[in-house]
Image 1 (cartoon, one colour):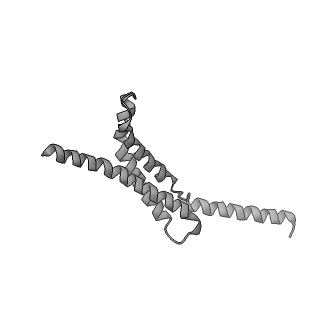
Image 2 (tube, one colour):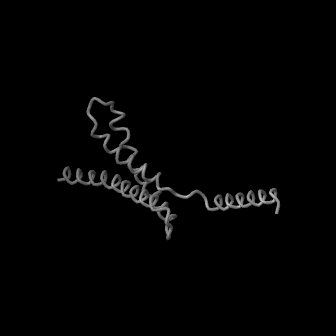
Image 3 (tube, one colour):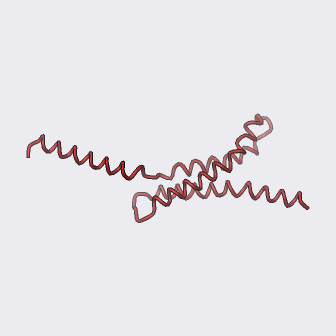
Length: 124
């Protein structure tokens, strides 16, 4: 086998591997749910900023807490579904996705619990 034939075989193998990667799609890393969950929890903290901050910075992100938190939960569960099975190298991605789901759940449950608590106090 000549050197040219070896190079052609290597190129064909690389193209075949790239095609397989494209067919499988990108592998979930769990980073998106983690960032969204952390952002949702941070948005709740904007309510507790001092009065010296502008009102849009204190109250604006509060309107986005539930959509971002729900998106973190959904994307985290999807990532966990795609990472199912005995894969050795994806432990970090699973952990990130689980933490993202937990933070998204916390950011969803906390405002709902506060609204329920306020309704109970004001309702009598």
